[in-house]
Length: 365
Image (cartoon, rainbow, N blue to C red):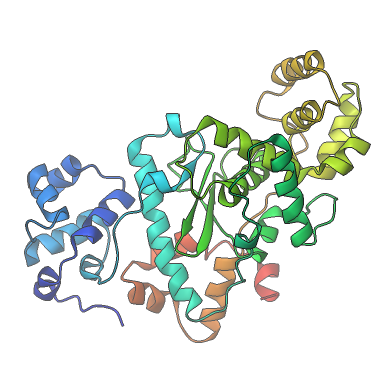
């Protein structure tokens, strides 16, 4: 049951962490929010650390400034922000603190949506945990970790046709990064007992997006007990992604020992990975020499840069939009769900891709 929007009651029940969550989700520094409210930044700080409580009038202004229902600020339960140290970010150095906090705050709100959905619709069983490999050290350990997942998930040694669908079927929830957080390729985290992966769908390269998804799967499997951001972890996740997408046994049989681009384009079409990832895998498995690898990268940059031709079809998350359809079929409207979650319908639709499910996908739900 959603909270009453009685401003005086909400002011009395005010939850400080909900204000911080809303502010960071909107990407507003304290001084900017204070300016909108005609308050001081220290007043916002006092609201957020619980040393002061906003009155009914201020709650109303917070609701307008942050575009959340007044009831959002009086929710019970744990609304403490997830630390960015709990998340594995790619391109972390070029991403601002505000952008990181925005995405982490989005994951908290999405987590609430997922918990609501899970109480009404049975989501796929999480099958990442049984394959965790927290003690990997060597390259061979990583190859074996990737092989173990493929064997457990009964994937064989061939190409993966739709990686996002595969991950979702194994209980990994895949989301799109917020549109104005473009300096990050991807990030992942565990939200309670559910693995989340966020992908940048505006990179202009579907093959690289697939690689990012496999990279984040590597983090979820290998680095749950490690502080994110370590260079070694990134290298390990890259090696895992390569081994998972291009199994050693198959790739050794198919990859040429010479730099023949038509052959590599055939491999790109078959395995749905970038040319850059193919030549890196060829080098890692000693199929090509270091000199050939360097020459390949020079040619890649000169010919295509980050805009390789013949990209695979885009892969979209479907679990959350499908559940929205199922819930609507149970006479639970998007507006009613949003009210239950104390958010606005526009945010619910955006975070769950509710308006992006294609007609053929709706009909198969």
